[in-house]
Amino acid sequence: MCMGELIHIVDSLENKVGKLLSKLELLQEANQELENEVNVLRNNQVQVTQTVSEWEEKYNALKLANSMLGSNEDKTEAKLKINTLIRELDYCIAQLAE
Image (tube, rainbow, N blue to C red; front, side):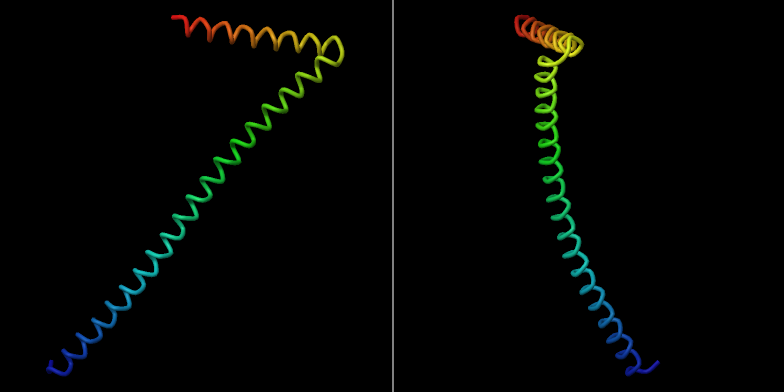
């Protein structure tokens, strides 16, 4: 092998290493963008979950209110729900008293 061939091989390797480093940098930037997007989506998911919980609570409150206005069967369901809530409150009070 002559010196010219070695120089050509070294130049070729340097060129390839440079290209690889450029690709690495691009991939790292893309990865960072994707991580940022994942974080945004996670935050959105938390907000949506909280909103769904709030709406479920409102729905249950509305359902309870409607049951109090409805038939005897609905009133029985409302009384049972109220009794359950009272028992839960009593349990919480007892836990706090300990």
